[in-house]
Image (tube, rainbow, N blue to C red):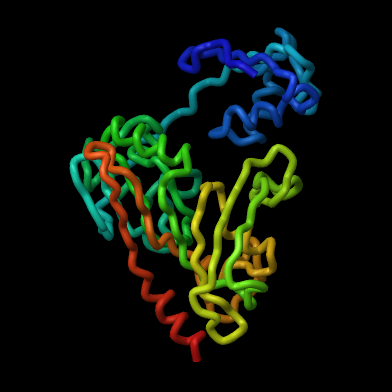
Length: 313
């Protein structure tokens, strides 16, 4: 499937290739336009902003080989994101990048329901105008992210050169990313690898699931750090890929959901936690300017350390 128009022009056109023939129109578009929700796409199809071979179509229409899809979407209205004087736990900073240790309950970039108190709001105050612009005004400097209730190390780019260089390493899966987590139940083996496809849950679109059709390859290596009290296990996970909710879904798929994760694990948690016990511990990459390897370690948050002490008893 080849894109045959510039993405910067109002109308984008796609030609359906053999490997995409038979796919639903909305499914096809959701794979191409990853920053747009499927419900939004379905609305645009109804409003005839999306045409197939120049004619109106339905979201569930099956595509044929060499169908021409024309997408004319009005650019989203961008909000004015305010700079906020929010303290950042800075692990490293120079003219090109800043590495922070993100706390729990802090969203990385503004989104519906979270237009203040985010990492981006804090960065706009701290870095002023020195943030990459590739991901637009809603996500300045953001080249990757972690979930709201996941803590730990993330890197932010201060210019487009740094952004492109770090993004390429992410694409090539050459960045070192290790996470520490407390999972429910003992592991069936001390270490292992979980590999397969990961994609949107076929029924609950807010969740991810393993081995779904048209999912993306996801690989997680895990090992036991401490068996704790036999009911929970302290583990380290190394990522080869960085898919949405990857560790949370993978560990739940083998019977070891992350403690506190009410989405993929038990709805009730005996420790009154706020979200999953998951921490981005180590982040390593080649510096965009010096090309030298750098590695950063984010200390475990206090609640995590306290919980480990309790579970060792």
